[in-house]
Image 1 (cartoon, rainbow, N blue to C red):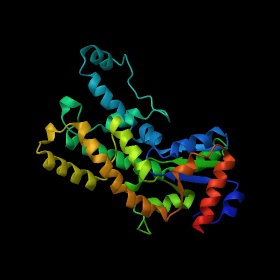
Image 2 (image 1 turned 90 degrees about the horizontal axis):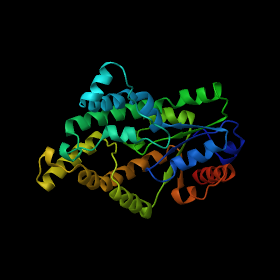
Image 3 (image 1 turned 120 degrees about the vertical axis):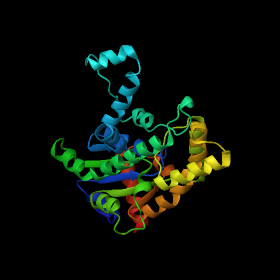
Image 4 (image 1 turned 90 degrees about the vertical axis):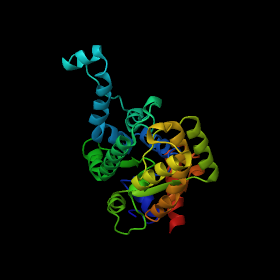
Length: 286
């Protein structure tokens, strides 16, 4: 870890942290709080994915739909209109819409082969965005003069990194530049995330092997064909399994940094609170 003790953290002129954990536990909340203080550069992995690595894919997908409408087709072919996505830190819907949900096209689903292709695009984009962290640390200081840096990751970082591998390339690179901070929830948080997802199911990124296994099990259990799958029912069915699949992977990542709880995160209201949170976690780690 780049900060071994609470004293190291408190004395650091340039503080650099990376938050990871399940979506909905406070990563972006903390990142927004730090950015609002004025001295922290907020690097959003999801925003980087949607703008740098998948922006063209998202725009082309929207254009493909527009080309099916004669009126819009003529305007596109004559360069009379422009189609793009309006991705912001607080609106990442274009990325989710592009990933889609596998299943019956008549129910808004995407054929599983195409869905897996887009999942692979996302995997590569997220890894590339994470590996860009050091570049943005330098850029934030050189170009904008920010002394501190926070990397706000997506919930799927644990799918691409192996915390049990001491030579994992992603974790090795990230831990060289940032203090890795896991935000950990308890069983109550997990159940609330499942209830929230059940009310409004959203596209997710899955480890390829897990996705294939889940897809085959769903087809078998429900005795249905690929184009008969209800997309929302499938991702609801898969979500709790995905959280269970991710827990040991998050645990393996924890040894690369420190852990704070989601309950502690919601009590953070200022920079002073945040510094105290990290200092306490470093003391416990030591």
